[in-house]
Amino acid sequence: MTPDTAPPQLVDSHCHLDFPDFDGQHGDLVTRARAAGVMRMVTICTRLQLEPQVRAIAEAHEGVFYAAGTHPMYAAEEPLVTVQALTALAAHPKFVGIGETGLDYHYTADSARAQAESLLVHIEAARRTGLPLIVHSRNADDDMAAILAREHAAGAFSCVMHCYTSGPALAQVALDLGFYLSMSGIAAFPRSTEIREIFAAAPLDRVLVETDAPYLAPPPYRGKRNEPAYVVHTARAGAALYGLTEAEFAAATSANFDRLFTRAAGPAR
Picture 1 (cartoon, rainbow, N blue to C red):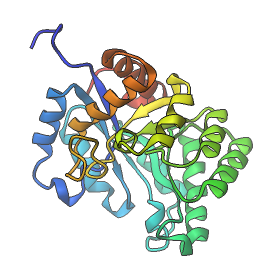
Picture 2 (cartoon, rainbow, N blue to C red):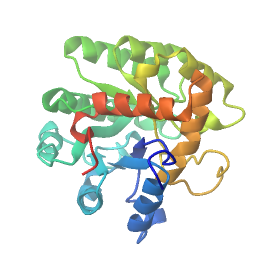
Picture 3 (cartoon, one colour):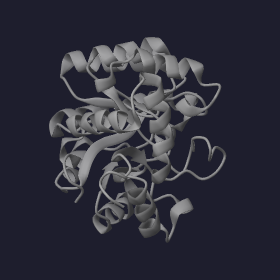
Picture 4 (tube, rainbow, N blue to C red):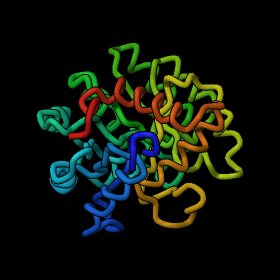
């Protein structure tokens, strides 16, 4: 493959390579991703007890970085994480973000208080480390907007709203705070008109792309297991949304990733 025919270089800003769906397949996943032009990816730990396994995947593969936190759906099941535990992880050179954390009222509204308490710990860790907060928000727009605005006013931090599928009001709050919105395969689904409209209204320099693999595979793989290589299909939809070539959109979202995830910026390592 010559430089002229190589695919545009992309970043999968959010995936879960430690999930059982990928057991024993990490080398092949990374190889397929690179062949598709996905040279860097961030694998996310959702329970801190699993951090060693997630870290090991990042250590074993060039271009794979990691983040860790307590997913809001597990906030009531897991011990409350401490700021000290999260900041200690930041000593690792491939640790690039705090989370994912957030609020999820779709299935776990009964643990809203525990989720908010956990979110506040993660926010403080993001402040202290200077690493970006990775936020999951589902059916919790008003509470999420209020917490993010109040906490940012109390002390700035950077943030990405991962797999953004919430409404336009929360998107505007996040953008006004200087945060980023991440586009998943859902944005490429035919019926996701409102989500595409939210991204179309967002500044291009505040948009990332992700897979959330093994979930949310974009067409033509919808309903199948997702993997980092498939982020190219989401990026293709994003390019069309902004009226850009695939190479232009890839360059823009990669630059955005570098600006936010400063530890993972530059050549893969």
